[in-house]
Length: 287
Image (cartoon, rainbow, N blue to C red; front, side, top):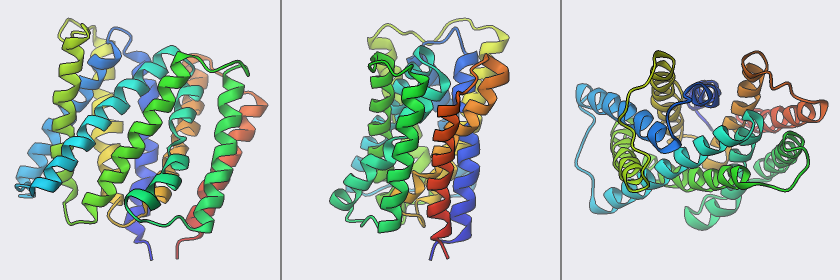
């Protein structure tokens, strides 16, 4: 049985994730690595303070600490590649491609964390995949995938690994505040090192619009969205949990219409419908 709190957290997380691409679009002056660093550093600071206030921070075992470092590295890489994709292709394209992660998890989770994918979850993944491919190709003009599309698919793989590690640690007794504090902090360090090595120096003057976009990106989809997502992993299987964020591109695409003039085609709307059906299949399977 899946606790209703986990499902509620996933729904709120998906709504929060929907704002991610929009904030990225408004942060025109910051490079992908600079945005990654700022969103993680702000979120990490907030979660560490929250963890200290709730007395949830603790010294982790060596094995758990290693896994947290792995999770932080992959989270940082996920953010960097996803932000790059959003800056180089349409909001619909980037968000739908990055949400191919449930397909990867349906294959990886039984192997890595011994979590069997049920027939209902498998059906949801198939329906969702059809929707993702339909939307991605329609938004892509049915041309060959470019660098931005490959970047979005890489982001999907990185978040799949991050999800697997999170599911393992959350079911092993590591609290949400403790896990996110460590992971966001590690990811912050990784993103800063990458930014400096690759010459994408984050520290510079930004105008008010960019500062507000950076702050919004750190608070809404990162501190709120990812923390709620990690909270849900203690009670919801990783394949099911990653089907809910498929609502992100639906939400992002709806907002992209008035903000950026990116009007979805009938083909894309058909894909949206398949995504909603996939999520509904999973939700109706919970008692």
